[in-house]
Length: 327
Ligand code: F6P
Image 1 (cartoon, rainbow, N blue to C red):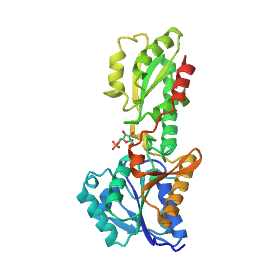
Image 2: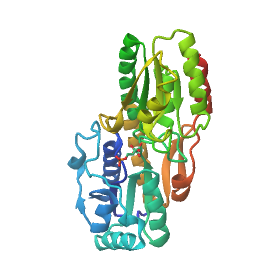
Image 3: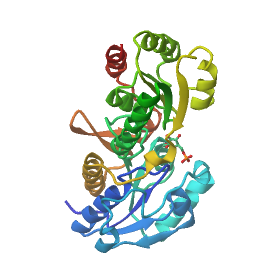
Image 4: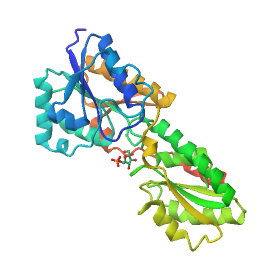
């Protein structure tokens, strides 16, 4: 089949996630292997609007598969939310003779991609990344596994000091709207409890669980709290519970952006390499308008709007296991 796509652009958008560089590398090297020209967009949608592009060659992605961050930078763009901004972006792409765009992004980026595809005739394919793992239609997003490993390492260290002092720790992990990191790390760290935005019972369950831990003479208690689970975060939570749990000294830790950086895990590099490769292959076949992901070990193609607005369910079984194992 004759390939109608000759020149593509690749960009990263939204909060960075470990494995983005591996995805850029995969897009570029796949495209070059099929004789396509590849340009990078610098700084996400902001760079797209301003025509901040440069041509890449094979060496542009040497030695980056193991690096966190994104060599082509990223942004959260307000301008791309406007039709005027998207029109300017389309103008820049056509002016540069670009026939297709690969967006390595999260659900905000895919909402923008949906609008863009509906308005302008240019193929666009998405590759899902975000440490929050909240893109619908795929089991895992690029960066989630690494972020969990980073958070887990920190929580293990907190356990040592919590145990030494018989303390109760509230550890806040990232996840403004989603509790996937808290859930996964809570289970893997042997946390006594987790608080996540998806489980409304979790706060009421928490006090019962802490009472139980106290009665069993537990020497330390760890509660992993997703950023979006409690108004005011772990500080507010600690202040609220201080009087009820006088028998434990309470401490808090906010892990923050440390979870976004660092060398991507083997899992994230593999996923990024697979999805970047597939995105280009799909685009070469003239496909457009979806996010490529993996679910149940199979490649899945989810329309931008569904990927951006669908609510990925948390694993309820994990929630129950945490409760059973901590009792
Ligand atoms: O979307 C990933 C994420 O790390 C969220 O977990 C967090 O709430 C948000 O980004 C923080 O964004 P920023 O780096 O723009 O403050």
